[in-house]
Structures are given as C-alpha cells and as structure tokens.
Length: 404
Image 1 (cartoon, rainbow, N blue to C red):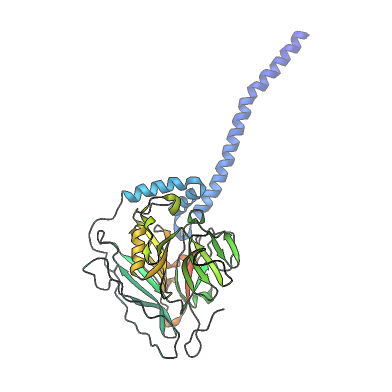
Image 2: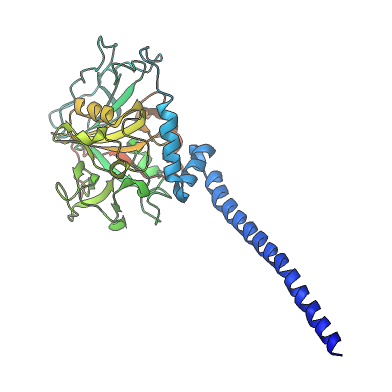
C-alpha cells in the first residue's frame, strides 16, 4: 500500500511539474496577445485618425510619443544631413510670387493702423523680380490691409530655395490661440478646429504653433486654464484679451497679468534685442529640444515682433535656426522665436474671399508654394494647436471697434 501511495504522489508531482512550462507558455502568449491588442489599438488609432497629416507622419508621431523621440531625432538628423539641397540653381517657376498692387482706399476717418512694411533687402544679388516686395493680402479693415506677404531666397549658397514672410498689423487684426486635440490636449477647449461659420466670416490667416509640448520646454495657457505650467525664460507667443499679440521672454518681458488671454511657449528666443541668439549655432539638444539639430537644414517656421508691434511669421525649406533668425531680423524683428518644424507641421495660410465672403479652403493660399499641407488643415479637426488672425470689426466710419 505504501508503494502505491508513493507512486501516486510521484505521478501527481510529475504532472504538476510537467504542466508548469505549459502554464508559463500560455501566460506569455496571453500577455503578448494583450500587448499586441494594446499596441494595435494605440498605433492603429493614431494612424487611422491621421487626417490630412498622412499615415507616415502619424506613425512617426506615435513613435516619438512612446519613448522613441531620441531614435526619431537620430534618424531625422542623419537623413537631413545627407540630403542637403543642391548648391546654386534657380527657384521653381512661381516660387517668387509676383507683387500685388495695393488697391486700398484709406480715408482720414479710417482705422488707426501701422504704416505698411518696407521692402526686405534680399539676401541674394542680383535680386529676382518681386523678391522682398510686400503684397497686401486678405480682406481689408476699413479699407486698409492688415496682412502683407512676400517671398525671397534666404541663402546665397542654396539659391533655389525660397522662404516666405508675413507681416500682420495688430491694430487691424485680432489673434486667437486654438487648441489641438493632442496639443495641448486636456480639452475640450472653446477655441478648437474646425472654424465656425462666424469665424470664417472674419478669418484672414492661420499658422502653426510650436513643438509638441513634451519637446517645447515650455507651457500652454488659455481660456483661464493652464494645460502645461508656464516656464520663466521660455520664448512665448502671448495673446492679450484685446486681441493684440507679442513675442517675449517669459518672466522678463511678461508675466501672467489679468490682460493675458493665451500663452504658447516654445524653447528660447532666437532673436533678442534685434540680434541673433548666439546659441542657435549650438547642437545642444538639452536647450533646443528633442528634434533635429539647429544647423541641420529642414523646414522651419518662426514668429517675431517688430519695434512698432507688428507680428511677423517666416518659414521656408532647408533652413537652419540661424537662417530663420536672420530672415526675421531682416524683416524687422526685435524679438523672435522658433515655432514648429518639418514640412508636415509648417504652414501659413491666408485667405482672399471674393466679395468679402467667408474664408474657405477654396480661397486660401500657402505663404510658400511648396508647403506640404493644404488650407483645408484647420477647417477640420487637427491634432496640433495653431494661431489664427481675424479682421477686427469696424463701425460705420471704418474705425475699429475696441475689443475687451
């Protein structure tokens, strides 16, 4: 009997031991399946919701946001460093846009406004026809244009490249920071894409904001809420409750006073006191974010402010940070900051609706002819935050009605 009991115990022990590897394999396989389902849901959701950004861009964004920022930065640096634009050459036909003749009819009782911008001295000589010459764009306010645009070649070496610059008068235009679904997230927010019909009725221009918040080294504030804490020393695009805007170093030039409506921070100032920040030639990612190096030539955008308060936007392909800073300085910036980079996120749209009708994708134009995204971008839900400029309302005499 004892022998039989021992044999039974041995059999049970053997059976339990033999089952353990099977249990382990089942557990591992089950966890792998759960992981794959989670990955598929997260990655697939990001790709399927790509909208006009495209599947490839959404895939890269997913990798960047799930621990792969350093890997993406390495790949981007390698790619752009080995795919520089050709030396010399002429711009594509139509890249330097022909100037538009101003047809505004300003009267003495019209709105208070800044004098039109002076032509930008081209970087390349001899200049091409229209290079650096401003053109009025968009609906007028009391007969006066609040937006001017121009194009020019930013490099004496890569002379086939063209950058665009926009000049905006805050006396005639009112600025609004719009939240994206992912940047800054934490919604819902009152101002989010797509534009409402009432906003389309006065929309003049719309342009990209800054880096993803995890790379921006700064904060995001609007509508009385802090999505990300504001950082002292950060370059900041500030919108005030009266609709005017400024580019400042936070904590030195501006704090969160009651008249501030929105703040979008991104890295450090690239122009301060009318001079290029010398650190733009550094490759220190700790200062300039988990993105391509400052000297790498890539699509870049930036905003600046002139001495008399005009807001500038500049963008172009294959620019270093120093190139971008020099464009903004030549356009008159006393302070400026880099905004988003790469062709998928860098865009400025302006609208010339017929008969002063609503701004629509069909009457929108890119600041630079080879910008990747279409004007449709902000007329549908979008992941990234952006800034829009609207015509201020006027009274019967053409004077701007103050905004509280």
